[in-house]
Image 1 (cartoon, helix red, strand yellow):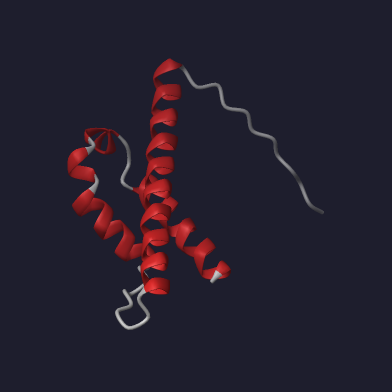
Image 2: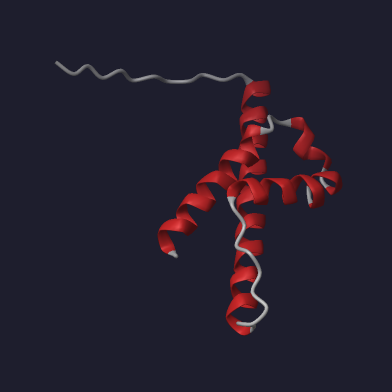
Length: 98
């Protein structure tokens, strides 16, 4: 027998703000990772002799921490897992497409 449960959240204003911040950071990390991987794919298609290594999710996160986080203070207001999971799912999506 399978049971299903419905759960409804009723966050207060502070929790709603924090949820929105997490979603915003994840969206920014996803868009940044997509931009970077598109640039690498374009570079590799235009330069077959000097191809760049396609980054994994871990590589993307290391680059994000080095390049993006210092310039965007709001990354430090949320959990570090928000951009990590966004980049992980982006990497999984790109693996299935390539």
